[in-house]
Amino acid sequence: INNKITIPEGTTSFQVVRMLNELDSLVGEITVLPPEGSISPDTYFFSNGQNRLHLLRHMQESQRRILKRIWKNRSKDLSLDSMEDLIILASIIEKETGKYGEREFVSSVLHNRLNKKMRLQADPTVIYGITEGKSNLGRKLLKSDLNKFSPHNTYMIKGLPETPICNPGEASLSAAANPAKTNFFFYVADGKGGHSFSQTLEQHNKNVRVWRKIRNSIGSD
Image (cartoon, helix red, strand yellow):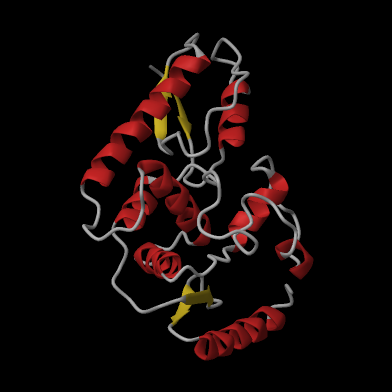
């Protein structure tokens, strides 16, 4: 076995299929899109002439195994009803932060909002509603985007979107199953690759103003 492919965390199923179909050393085209969230992001080894579908199934089996283990060890008071809900929430966490040690806090905000019946208002869900996971947005998210209905747009819908928005890795699945215990309801980028978390809208608005200043000063509005 002399070939390998790495599926990064947060890759969509459409992107994974494209990656697999473009590998000349594999055979048999994948024509059916696997469900979003069903693939485990990891590095996989394969031999020349291996069937693409077999490799894809191996990736899905790996995700099922990880998911079952994490679901079994979830927080006792977790308010999610199913493993599917867990993947959906984990996929949002995956897209919101790549920062080690921050996922549990993002998870706590999302759980706190769900428990209070507040909308999640997560930008990556809006982007997925527009791109369907087929490409990057390639521009700044606009206010008008937030007001466009899609079954994924958590500014418009209550609760979780109807499907995951990417294939989350083990760290994000774990964070979704075991959120930090906080009173945070908001977060915004802090300009240092992480987020500022807050309990109140007043504090959040202050953090947003700080972030806008930073963003404008680096000229990438």
